[in-house]
Length: 426
Ligand code: UD1
Image (cartoon, rainbow, N blue to C red):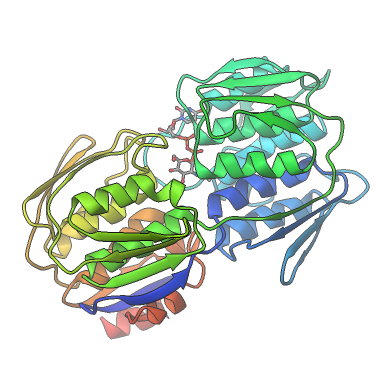
């Protein structure tokens, strides 16, 4: 268990490079279980969730070699289709092995997935879609048990909601299925587009990537792939928000601005100056106090729910009132109570937060209840006066590589410590 000690109040200044996208990496690592040969990936972020996915691949018989790049080499056959003893239950990304193993071996046993505690997270869309492709799936003793006795077949699937995970699971399953699959009302997020590009470079034919209707033509076996994972828009967005919240000037490079536009528009609306160079280098300059704004989270290209908690921290210091409406998750206000301990004035009604901006936050011991809630507390601690200790930092480390080093490179006074050390400092 670890904590981040932050001596707040220093404007962040400088430049960092975005890590490889966490959520793209998770989808692509699950899709690696479709391959009978080799996958070589670069720019894979060294974070907890990625390490969990690699240990699952190892249990399937894949050889992993992670140096400059990451090589995933298949054994002669998949050794195992039961993932109940692999740590798969601790992260959400493991759910994508459902489509991958049904496609590859026709059999899978998976523990119900874990991940962030941000409300109810049903998996019905995954199961309905896979059933339409010929899978027989039941939930028994906390496990998902799937079989595709006659193999998976292409299908026309309409998603009630553009679920990122369901879109990915079905794309992965469709890659080795016989015939064509269409996913209507598909998600358009960065990780979906990148997964699609990865599958296309293995010879799968995909049309409509980045739109609401995706067509996939399955293939008998996938060609070896070398693929570079693009920069992480949520990580990049977090550092841009931290720059804005501390009234600094921060540049993030190595990220496609397409996936950050919803954030950049909102930062501009709040009065921040944004500069984009060459489509992949983004700067925020916050010389004035931000103004209160309204944000409603929506599936991409709407405002990303994963940046909502950090934007909430930023807006606690805005002039006037901000309103945040969370429409994607029903329990993503876990950061609010902790922000109140730092002097933020926030009222929550259901999934709406009403933030009345204050002149300053003051440092306090706070607890991260999940990944992005933790990131929002780090943003708040950096912009607060005095010392903040963010406990539960292991949640944040699931998604941010080199957090301490990157913050220090921007001039932040931060130290990663054990809980015991934090207790002595407090
Ligand atoms: C992914 C991201 C996560 C992000 C989310 C939304 C990964 C590993 N995680 O999560 O960081 O917050 O997209 O941008 O990429 N839903 C159903 N039934 C389903 C599936 C989803 O009702 O079968 C609902 C969920 O409860 C939730 C909403 O749809 O309310 C969004 O979920 P989804 O888009 O599936 O998110 P994830 O893929 O889990």
